[in-house]
Image (cartoon, rainbow, N blue to C red):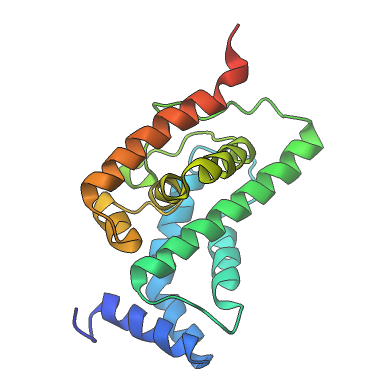
Length: 195
C-alpha cells in the first residue's frame, strides 16, 4: 500500500488523528464521505418513504461519533470502516427504538434469512433494527466473533476479504461464521412468528 494511495492516505490521517492532530479530521472526511454515504444509502433504501433519517444525516452522525473522541484508536482503513459499521448500527438502532416507542411496534417485520445478506450485495431489507440489535447482543454473548462478522458484513458492507483482514482470521472462517450467524439470527428473529 503506497502512502499516496487513497487507502494509504486514510490510514495516515487516522494515525495523525490518533496522535491528536485535529486538522486530520477535516482532511479525512472528504476521503471517506462518499463510501460512508453509499453505505448509509444502502441501509435506508428500502426504509419507509417518510423516514426522518437521511443518508447524509446518518453519515454525519456516524462521522461525528467516530472522530469526536480525542483518542481515535484506528490502525487501518478497515478498522475505521469497522468502527463506522458499529456507529451506523447504533444510530439506526437508536432511531428504531425511538420510532417504535412512538408507534408501539409499528408493524415492522423482522429480518429474514433471505434478506440477511450483506449490504455489499445491494440488499437492504425493511429491517427491525431494534430486534436485530437485541439478537446481535445475544449472539455476541455466545460468540463475539460471529456477531462482529455480522456487524462488518451487514452494517459495514465489507466483503469477506476485508472482514477477514479486520478480524485477523481466514476468509473461510469468516464465510463459516457468516453462514452460522445468518441461520442463528433468522431463528432468533422469527421465534414469535410461528402461527
